[in-house]
Length: 443
Image (cartoon, rainbow, N blue to C red; front, side, top):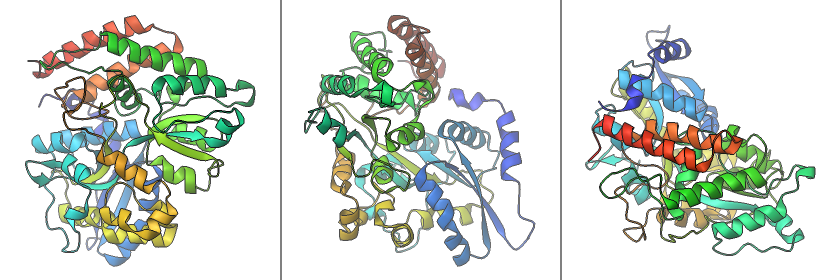
């Protein structure tokens, strides 16, 4: 096993045990422990899971809900060490095929006859498939989009193009920043993490014609394309972003935009539900959207992510865990969310039947846009810059989890003035080369 994360301190496992417990006091009850992320759709899942327990009185659910970076670290530790503290884990389309190859996950089996695997959107289904076998079930999926305040644009006499460029976004952000009113022209992820700031940064670098590795798998960070991309990102956030941007990931920027503090926000399509329909959104009547901005490589991969439910090979209650994972990702669960929360809150990005629903299309004006963004997130060999990997806002190799986290910390320091772009990329290049060589993946 070559993943750097496999050597994370085993003390995490002890902490997990304290949180998750080790069993049920009722010998007739199976206790299933679920690790998930503290995103809105998962909070709804936890709330509605009482219905699952009602339908399955011999199964009781225990929840461990964690911030994204913490979830990844704890779940990786538990699954890699075989500790068995979690029966269901929430993982991304990055982990699913890699962990399947490492035999850390159980193949998906014994799905109900009405589950309808073919209803899962093809790019999303393929992303959690390894050698023709599903190893995780998609709960929700996303691409990315540009959210913007239509009222602020109109007041400033600005018009968002149908396909904005990064250069145009920078000009708009500069015009719309009003620090006296705590309105910031742009919000982007600044919190370090391979799935936090590096998701945004990788998408930007790809658009600027950059790549993590050349076709011989040599690190390609200290290059003109990366310099242009990171300079753009760092300068834009420092000039027109909110203070303390290095503390802001998806949830923090969602809160900033929803409360009226961001004029533009480029991030995951899943946020559309909360911005348009969430009770805490103060901008639901003023928010509009456009595609992710274009850069020099107009056909670069953009963003494809899914949060999925998987059963680790170390699960002590695999049958019950698989039953819950199937329930929470089923058509019936989508209908349950629609009935209890409203159609706009149906888990997005996973099922064709959701997008075929007239009720969903009426409730979610962004539905067709999101489906199309997911469909076109990974263009087939049309990029101007050839890349040895096909993933979008991450690199689908085991060592990327460690590499991305370290590089994310280095680039975050450019936002605080602790380092400059040249120094950050030289250090990032060296770290990436060394990590790839140590992992045995270097060619």
